Image (cartoon, rainbow, N blue to C red; front, side, top):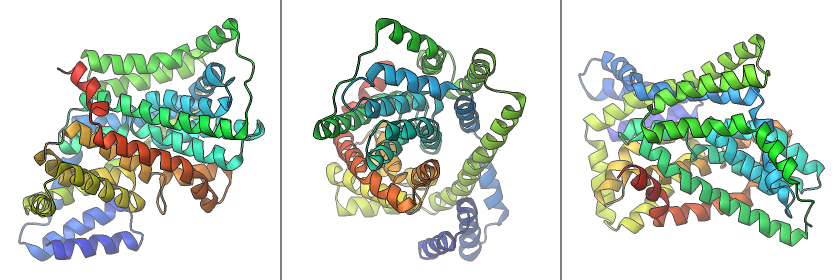
Length: 425
């Protein structure tokens, strides 16, 4: 079966077939060629794969991200970040990273974070005299933090396909996300020192309070959502619904930037993105069932453990597998296909499933920045009007910063596990 499955899947992806169709067709063909099981099982497994209450949070968080992007929240968060750190040497660079952290904590989406913050910060930084390549690379990389910082949509997918607690995953993503943002800030500091950037005028107390007041409703979003999840008031799925209601209230009633016409466009965009993700999930679920029913995950575990049972070396192998996959698959597909196969192997060598999930997400985050299918590269190219190759070159230095962060988080599990262990003793 494996000899049939791998070339069929590779061929369907190489000819440019949509990922969900490639996954479903592969399951259909392999099942038909290698067994007498009715082919209708493929459709049944596809439906069963998305018949999951937890996955309902995906379209809701996507809708919430679109509401916030259109509703004026991004502009207020960017202004707050500029007031807080924009006066430091290289302050606009710090502000870009901080604004991405703010928006990631309310959107759960990496492309949405990059589109919302990049549209505002990239032109502003270039106009302020920052190097164009540095600016594009930094903001594109910082935008990918939306994959790790909760409420991350891809973390929800990982939890759904591996059975890991989404509440614990959300808690686990906080410290690594802030740690990666801190590494990017250090990179900004080094660049500012090298370029001899001066201090600006610090904001007055009144300016600080005014910026905080303008962004107060934006900052209330993660407090309500994550506080509700960690306190047990509502589930992650219910928190996604709350995010939609909160964002719509703020964008339409408080900021008055969402009209009926723009609401229709928001619903349309969110529906298209959600349907794409859920179709991929359905196709991958059918393929995952086929693999599991034939014992392929156990065979992979046996093969990997036969190479070495050293957890340190296996962690490096896991990273390499995900990094390579990230070059050719989007984040959701890589998680749906590989996480159910590799997570049992990770647990068998004593690696915590939550920690493995954060490792997986950081690898996927790096995959968003690597060609040929790195989604954030295309988003950045569209925002800036620069050729894709120019964006790729611009991203390389800050991508190296993320690679250093990946190594540290891989071998320092405390960064991922401290908060969930404190909140879920």
